[in-house]
Length: 403
Ligand code: CA
Image 1 (cartoon, helix red, strand yellow):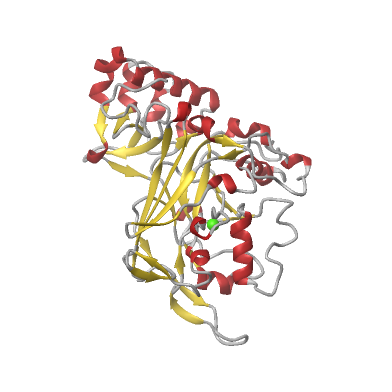
Image 2 (cartoon, protein in one colour; image 1 turned 60 degrees about the vertical axis):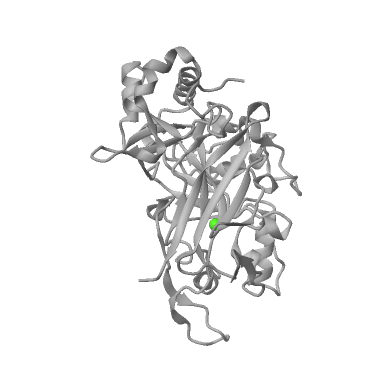
């Protein structure tokens, strides 16, 4: 297996088999593109200029968008170059001046988010939420097994890992049927552990992207924490959809993992019944074996398995464009909360506390929903080549009091 000569990288979860991209800056410098290797990043703009890499000017930009817009041939070309350069000991003298320890940089939001769409692709999560929010109804609506349900979120409030999360205020669900809603800081602030998919190459208005064309358009993946105010959501969302209960902040990782790094993580979907319409039929294996971890105040409270998701990312993309809606560079679509079958694999506190009725222990404290000062970290790993693991960039957030 190919390994890196970068100190500490060989055999780590950030070896040459991974190579996620991000945006960094150092004091007094403009933000620009870096690629992570071990506990370092490579300052790509000057290295690509020195090595005369085709299209290397896109690394001297404050977001990944220009690089992503070049399309799959360029992504593959750059990845090939980086794997060769970072694993060939003879390149060491050339690259070493451009290695920067991660501890010395500030990381920024890696992409300029064009549109943000959030799906609802976990059958366990959708069933649990149905049972909690509509106990007298069928947990799954009749459409759920026929299409990946989704909604359009707020692109401008997607923030990078580490950004503080200010407790949102709003109208909260009244106690009785006809009562006046209360107004104030959300008392049911929650997380949603999700995977996000980043569009690099756009598509034309009026055309659709097939499941087979997924890798021609999607550049990479990121962990997502889709912060949710359950009391605001429960009051506002019937019958339209999520709005202010979700739009105050969505956190993504500082690192976008290229799709190519996840080849060894591809698995079959758990199974779809009934068989979806032809435009949604999956190219197998269409699922991803990504192991997610939810940590609150230093304690792991859940381990949601992405491999349990009902709808695949390629099906989400095909559905999102089947009406002719075009894609733009920087579009972000997220999977929806990842929840497995067991209690300890649920990806939201709503489910872990069963609507707030079953408090659970976190670091010696009782929790139903998040309190001010709580620190949430999402982490994830996936299989790499030859039995290795690759790491996905973590997503951190600390709750600050409402303003
Ligand atoms: Ca969500």
